[in-house]
Image 1: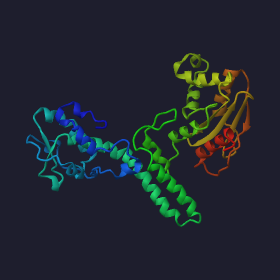
Image 2: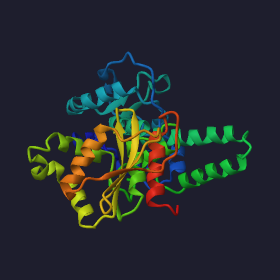
Image 3: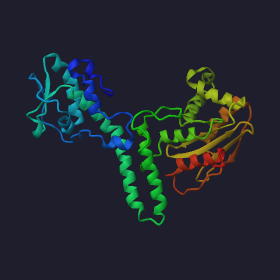
Image 4: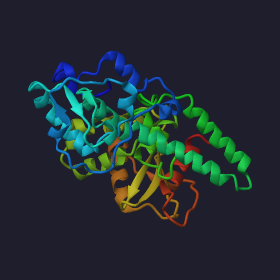
Length: 344
């Protein structure tokens, strides 16, 4: 069983170990094999039945796994109500669950462990299975659309590489090699039209190298909070600012060669910043070509002066130009990549 704690309430709610291996996908399955695993669909229609309509004190008359896997799961709201109700039901002598909402199964009486089974499948359906399924569909649609393009052979090769990856990586677990632990299904959004989020930016920043301090998206927002209390001594003493102080100290004593990060301006625009403590320079990259703004410089100037005692100069970071800000985060990350890893 995956996550549900309902089996601790009563033994009858625990899915037998032998059955668990049949009804749940093995965590070592590849993404493509996982998507082929038979999971019940989740009904999107509301039910008129109350939770009590599902319970009975008669003995179960079937434990047919294939039949159970074919029964549509009630809507999430109904499953949540059944999870809450099952404790009282089993303690009062309930042995089985009926499915009054499914005509083909209305005469069947199922063991009550079908409730935690439904709860687990619902989690899978709304997290890992949904994410990986959308990624596979995205690749399939792209493959169909890109066949009409002039360089279809090249794009087809890229899509095939993506499919090969989905055939090799497991569907479950955590992404390895990054500072922040994220479930593997978070990778699925790279195969979508909405892949550039904070998680992805932090992952790309992590890839730039160990000698460079690549600060994640929380770095500048933490600096802003420290700047608000710069005259109170809180920055020097507060545990919440310790990690930012550590970065400053590492840059001063040479343990880090530089710092790169992305900074949000006005809530809808991003600029790339690279700090060179050896030369006392702030490299500032704005794809609109704008000069550094005060909401950034005031914070950076305070922090760099606090740690070094010097006033830093601002130089323009080489960055691609763009008329709209839709791709500003991606272009900013690309600029940092070329700045710190010019050979790539």
